[in-house]
Amino acid sequence: MPRPGRFAASTLSFGPGPITPAVKWIVWANVAAYVASVFFPVIVEYLGLMPESVIERGWLWQPVTYMFFHAGISHILFNMLGIWMFGVELERMWGTKFFLRYYAITGVGAAVTTIVVGLLPFAVTAPTYFALTIGASGAFYGLLLAYGMYFPDRPAASGGPRVAHAAHLGGLIFGYLYLHNGRGGLTAEIKYRYLKWKMNRLRRKFDVYSGGRSDWDRKVH
Image (cartoon, rainbow, N blue to C red):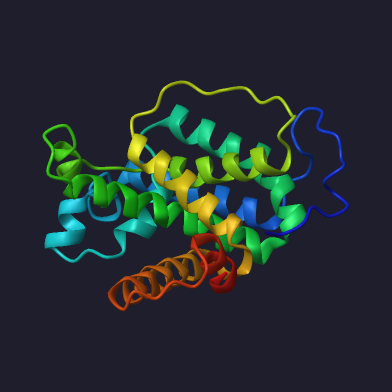
């Protein structure tokens, strides 16, 4: 997990100050996509996220492109305002490369979570499979998580209720996993969990005990 640099102690008055490179690119990309969707609304059907299209049609670009489109002026305005307010300070602290990687992982992770929820065999989640999800809210919630972890005592205004709860949850989960595991990220976490499960299975099979669960955890980790 990256350590706060010299910018971590800066005070926040009205906003975080001048916009940083990655945040500027993200804002302009979202604005351009929104303008394009106003003149050509049909592109949202192809570039928004619909689990049915990803699974059955193979439209694998949707988990990436969906986060650049929005449903209206207020939708894009509040998302971009939030990304500016919370993202600028994180980018200064992390650097542009890490910030972009984190933003992409949380945004795509939010999409993956939405797809998984749509595949669940429950009546309450079934509509998600055919629902169109757009917006940067998943990645934005990932930024909120990171900001809260680094600056837990800073007050922040809460937003109103949103629709894509699965995407928000996914952004939080993937953001936490990525930051919690530092440079290893989600891949290292999955490999660790798989190795731990496999070794525990072998240990039970051959009745091998290495001094208890805590001892095993320490050696593997």
